[in-house]
Every structure is written in C-alpha cells, then in structure tokens.
Image (tube, rainbow, N blue to C red; front, side, top):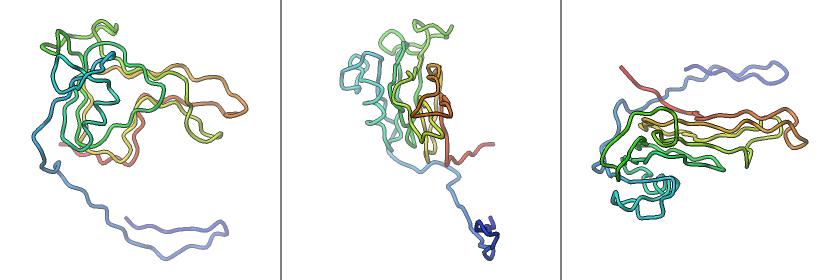
Length: 178
C-alpha cells in the first residue's frame, strides 16, 4: 500500500509505502479442545454432562484452538460477546451433545444468540448494539447459529442520532480463502 496523508489545509505528506503481511494458514498449536456450553450452563464445560455458560466457554477458549459446542436454546446477552482467534462456535447440539438437529428457527431446535437492547455502546453520534464482535480475530468459525438483536431503542438525549444494531461486528479481519 502507498499512503499519503493530507492535513485540513490540504498539505500532503510524501508517499509512504506500507507492507501488510499475514500468515496464509493458522499457526500450529495444541490439539483442538472441546468445551460444552448451554444457555443455562453453570458447570465446568469440560465434559458434555457439565456444560458451562457461553461467556465462560469463550474465556476458556481464548487462543487454544478450541471448539465450543453449544446446545440448542436462546443465549441472551446484555453486552457484546467478543470472539477470539482460533476458536469455533458450533450450535445445534441436543441429547447431551450426542447429536445435532436441523434448525427450524425455534429455540427448541436452534442455537440462538440474542442481544437485548441494554448497554448501548459507542459515542453519542454513533450508538450501537452489538451481539458479537471479532475485532482483530483470525481463524475463527461460527456454525449453525442464529444471531439476533433486539430492535434499537428510540433516539434519546444520550444518542440523539439513533442507534444501529449489529448481529456480528467485524473489523481488522484478514479473510483468506480459495
């Protein structure tokens, strides 16, 4: 890339050449770890009979090349859930995670990540409700999930320009593919 910076007066800098490099394949690491989570989970997450919460599963999976298996149901969030690198979130599990089910969009057969309208983020000029974000993350996968947000609240003194909603907010992501 060649970057030229302009001031508010129109003065320009000399061109600066920048190279951005990234790995073409994920780094090698530990063997995939499986973490089990359910919408009512309070267990360790290390075995299918003791699922943990989604937030705890995300914490456990940071940079460990983990697969988080999510039971069907609705996972309600009141703040943004941050997805890290080297993790998979896979929904649709039933029967103590022994099998998966095709989804019809209901909580009985679907893994739903639902972000409520509380805890609006951002500046007054750019308020937002975000269910999940992956800022700077790489090599992550979301599979068999329905990501939903509540309707944005009306404009207010705190957010006079309105509020946007995002199911998944991505920035500084490196996309590779064939």
